[in-house]
Length: 290
View 1 (tube, rainbow, N blue to C red):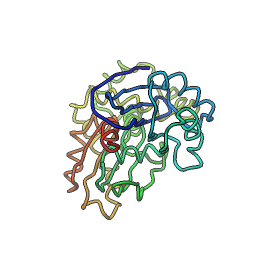
View 2 (cartoon, rainbow, N blue to C red):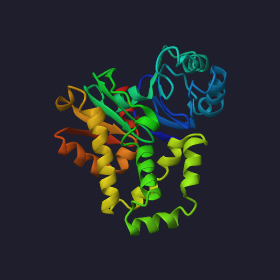
View 3 (tube, helix red, strand yellow):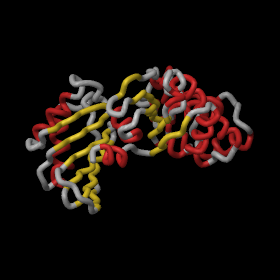
View 4 (cartoon, rainbow, N blue to C red):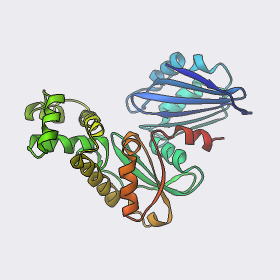
């Protein structure tokens, strides 16, 4: 857990969270500044209210040290009121003085963090991929991805999977093939199939290969691989929204952020307006809830 304080003026104490299954980033806005906290991930799909209360008690509350009046929690697994109930119950229990407790999806967090109070298209390109049309306060429409095996085009898992398939099918240029073999001597058909079909989180396994892509992105083969993946994402998800040409297209996530030059080029080639491209939506969420 890490804590950082930055001075600013604020009359009421607002707690904001951006949570995944692995970690949760918190920002507490208070009269004397901003406190940033990091805790374990909170996902109601895997954790009960009691489990979440335990994390809050051990990793968040000790760093708060003040009454919290407003809470805005954006998290994976919080798709609706039913699925997010364990998180809301835990927050209400741990912060009884909060008169506003909002629990919403990580996609709404991305939309508000990227677009603020303006309408726009908000997209996530990280390990996975997602997209929504946003009206300035709430998400209106999503062109649903089919997940890791059938979709997630443009994501880290998609890029890594594409790279590994090219390697196993002997389609990489010779110099890249040599580099890849040296960096991943354990990779062969059997190990990849084992990770793909027998071990948990194949999406995370394949997404890890984007480090190789990033380290060698100047190679034409890899820059073209990323460009093609982004073009597929744009064609399958972004341009299917009828309002696409009217709004800016914003992105959050590590893949969008680290390959933003290629992403911007792909968007401009499609005649789309480039919006914000951020690694995390938290700074925008702090602004949104000011």
